Length: 114
Image (cartoon, rainbow, N blue to C red):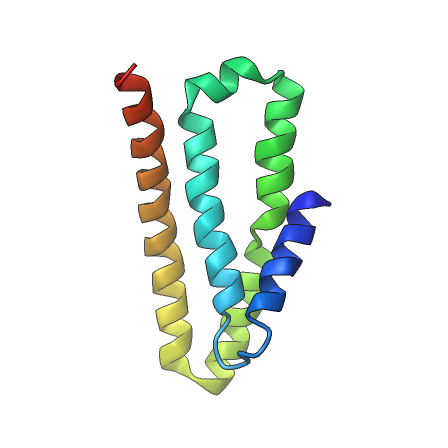
């Protein structure tokens, strides 16, 4: 419920744009970073009970991000603009992997500096 409410809140910020799904792109990319950071941050893992950790990562972050909406938007974009659809796919995948890596680096660098 928390993640879905946050995602809805973000969609309200981008409500005026109907040509490109910036809201879904934003939540998915931010979610990639946050999830990777949390999963690779030992301090977070140690200080939270497994149920809280799983609820936070799988529950909150999982419901914040949205693959199903991404998929529907890709199909819609193909009908209106193939180039936008391809751009959206590429930026989502490459950007998601990149931000996962940045989240990993931030989490592990913080641990190495201690």
